[in-house]
Length: 316
Image 1: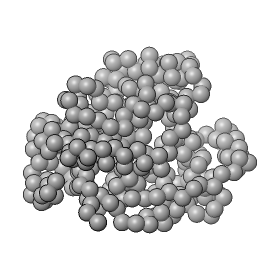
Image 2: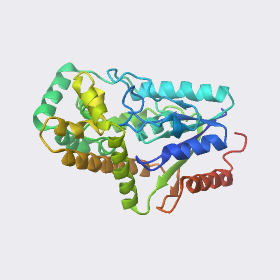
Image 3: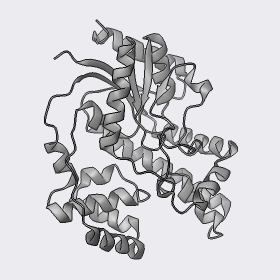
Image 4: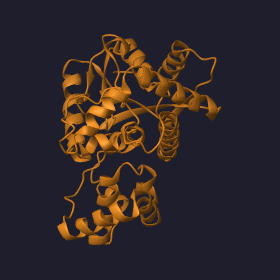
């Protein structure tokens, strides 16, 4: 079977993935497919750092801003949507460039993982939900970490729904979500993937970029966006987005604005650490070191050299 070529640009938040993916798409006649579990939702623009029209530079982007935040969305559905997007891109003789920091989405899609139907038990879920309310999400996440450290590594206490789901699957089946995922690789991948990620020898530089991004988000109206979403209790997904929950303490009067902002920066830095940990498991990633002196164009040039020396682009 002839495999479909895909360039995947992955890594931690605020590392410069979007800029690099756009430059690659411009250079090699490509279009971008998002692999971000929050940018799919309509209206959640600032908190999820959706690329602006200016940042897209005329490059078509897929799987951004197309799902209602009141709607449930699964990894299985992402695989279906990403498959359609890549097929559409190839039908126009263009190169798909996957870009995002949600490792579960990117790897499940590109590695051709097929998910089994998950067991469902209302009583079990009610019990776990009650524990969530009484003990807090951090306690349940720690419990999951002992059972399934790999699944827990990709989750944040804000991801309460996914934490409960992973525990529910384990207690109903005796299998971890990771075990079920590994068994679900039934067929070889249909994609020939060239993985790229940006690494930071100076981790503080990444953290500085994160802090600056949060400041820009606040200047661009993050507070108003968060207030609007948190008013609607049905928007469970919105509460999972880093940015909304951290600011809610200030809105409720429990903490001051400065403390809420510092909490937001800290949680975003922690999220970046979890993303780095997740992608370290992927031995196929080609890393490009990013230093404070590097411009976006210099980073892109490094990626071009990697791609052209690898021979990946032959026949693309």
